[in-house]
Amino acid sequence: MINIKKEDLDSLEHLKTGCFGTIYRKDDKVYKIYNDDIKCQNFEMKRNPMLSHRILSLQKLKRLISLRDTIKQTDLIEDIIYMNGKLYGVVMPYYDGKLFIDLLDRPIKERIDYSKQLLKVAKELTDNNIYPTDYKLINMFLVNKRIKLIDLDDIFTKVTLLSNPIFEIESVNILDETIKAFLSENKHYVCDLSILERLSREHYKLNNSYKGIEDYLELKSIPRDYIFVKGESTDIFDDLSVDNHNIIYVFDRNNYSKEEIIKYINRLKEKRINLYDVVDSEHIDEYLNNHQYNSFLFLNNNEIKLKKKQM
Image (tube, rainbow, N blue to C red; front, side, top):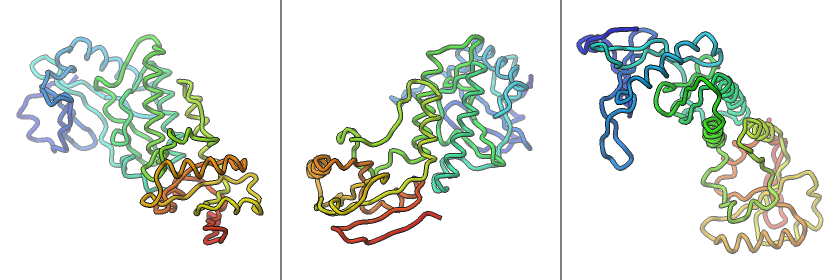
């Protein structure tokens, strides 16, 4: 327990002010001082739940501290800050690393490895009845090749004595969305695959468990052979062996409507050509940066324009 006075904050380095707290630094420690009020989605101000429910908040924070020696994959809060005998904030480690939001340009293999490590962190927390529901790319650090989470103290992390399947499902679903965003699975350059019913594209079933995320990461780890096809003709497939290749239809966003794209895709289905994905022609390089591949062909109206093997 740390007792602090308001004037003591003047000796600390101010780092930033967030929704729930203001962050100060001293050496290798961070002091998170809870804001009295927080801004809601409708821009109205309300009392910070961490302060308006101090007894429940203290129970949660004390449980997090009690688990510090148990949790190996990441760090929990280290101490509780009091002012005038009341809860005022928490002490956490200071991280000198990279936020996940700044790692989006890293090679896909590297990002998959980080995602697998993040999954280990999540599993360990869940095994100890800690359920984060605020997995964000701005809440995760890479420090000396290890994943560190921040803001595990706030209201978006549930901490219980007994396991809670409902909290776990919520936490898993949010982690799933975050990992897919980190691996650029749902980027603007991919056509609306919900409209295209995803066709026969490989993807996984989440089933509200970490197993679904594991399957997804394994699927993303497999190098594949891609054939990018641009042009309206389907005759190109008559003399082309496409077995074990992933066919990706390339379209020009400014020249084709979704209806025209779907019409062309239906013609491919009539030829029993299974489409793996759809991509805007301007974003092929970006697309490949987010997929593991052995090789790919770029076919433009029966002409091979580009052939490349990933190094």
